[in-house]
Image (cartoon, rainbow, N blue to C red; front, side, top):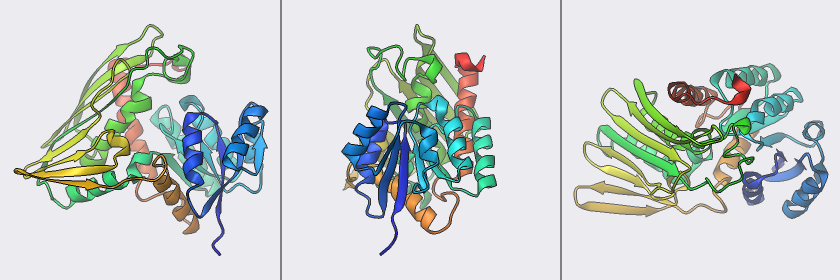
Length: 327
């Protein structure tokens, strides 16, 4: 029988709960340990998701010899620090997006990963979604001709959230861009690559965080119109149009359960439902890489993470999106 990949989880918030639920759906994976700064929270989480060990500190989990790979689900601002500490303990790492606050953070993380010969990947789970993978394959195969237009948005109302919480707190790297704007930027990058130029504008909240960002990515023969916001909802459908047809990722597109292909008056609807919350594909990719001795994913490489960080940083500089800890 194939030995299971043994996972540890730190940062036991909402995303970690969804991830843990899906991790328990993957046959060759098990949750060995979880850690929180609150021992009670760690014990409660461990009991709910059947983890063998609960720790009251992240460092204690990193020292656990039974853990193969650590899922870092802390707020953005802790991603670099905790990933590096885990890797220096010889642990493989899947780090929530954005992997670093700036490109140089990721460069540092990659250096540590290579020094310790451990696997590192940004948890950009949408890359492994079956609908998104299929749409990319269709675009790459020329199914809709030359790609000329892409539109993707991601928005929800969040101005009623606590100001000390993750989204509205500048000390935690809050705002729409790094939390949800990363998804539209990712889709444009995935299908069109690095843009030649970027035009962008943002609006800001009273706490200082950015709460609306519109982006126009200019390519040689295409444009991508992207948006993220916390001031209202949006349709959250992605449209990818070419010279001979269009593809649509159904709402919410970043967790698409299918897609549509339109050519002339003919529309084909394809359903591709995902189990659980949709994280199983990302988990299976990490497990596969570890079982095959790979230190990075071919589907979402470390260079991909560097490129994505560069795009987000360019937008931040253009729009004056800066956090207090960066002053």
